Length: 296
Image (cartoon, rainbow, N blue to C red; front, side, top):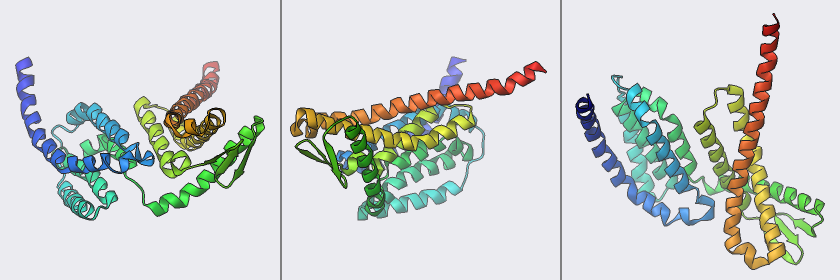
């Protein structure tokens, strides 16, 4: 029996290794350029995290995908997607259009699944591929359009909370004045990319816990948006208080990076807390429905 499993698994491994090496040969230069380019910026620092988590999700679902798609028909439509993906890759790489170049990576993976294992495999792997979309940088015009009102709202809430806590704070647009210090709420602190990163964190959590309750999944997915906003407010407040109590050098130095950790920790704690409340509400609703049946 063990020898049969070994002999049957060898052809499968040999079938996939040339494809894996081909994909690596295509996209290692792309990811190397990203690692030395936009991923060094604070706004896009989530890129490698998204990539690693997506690859982990693919690895996690790999055995299930192989089992469920075994003996299933493959799809010739995958070749069409592959041609489109390679076209995007050539245009994006030559013209430095990151949306096309990174987007082609997702399409290549989808095409390979269709060609090798069919629609069943793509259905099983849909979330890891969808999750990779959060790695794609949005056009600057879209980011600027949504970021300014978000920064205004975060600045307004942070100012009012700190003012309520008796701190000497005032605001002019997205500039906070606390004591003798002025702080500009930057795009990285309260921008669209930060919101999308936290949204990705929430969706990753949803996929990981895999709740059976549709209400709980939908409610948490919707509530991730205000949770992300709240986490941004907490981050801005932490930076403001650090600057006020320890000086501008502390706020702009090591502790500024620590505030980024505060952002993700705050978001994770809020997601877990809200999920716990939704679990309690779902159980209470289930008890209310079951009780009349038991009385009958």
